[in-house]
Image (cartoon, rainbow, N blue to C red; front, side, top):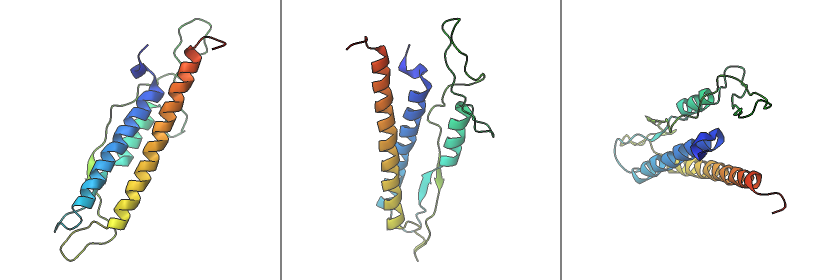
Length: 146
């Protein structure tokens, strides 16, 4: 079984890819803080979140659709209709900050730095979950008593 077939790892990888792309976009915003007419940008997190929720089978009810793979007749069946996690589906949108300067620049450094810190914390949390999940998988695959 490939790691790509385990949905939790795919979701975490996609999330980390989105957060990495967001860091790049925010870094460009900071680099263009003095560029006349520059409009701040960000990743469209709502569309990415919708793609992840649909991949996990979450409808309006919010019920998780992460399914269990049935390899033996005695296994319990998980919810039907769950699909794999999406590839990294996100787009860059214009997201002006709270102020626009006289030269038309809409980058507020304090807001951008705050978003960078928030994105870093979210990335570290996803990476930590990935690492812990790998540890649990290794533990499950190891021989008893080792």
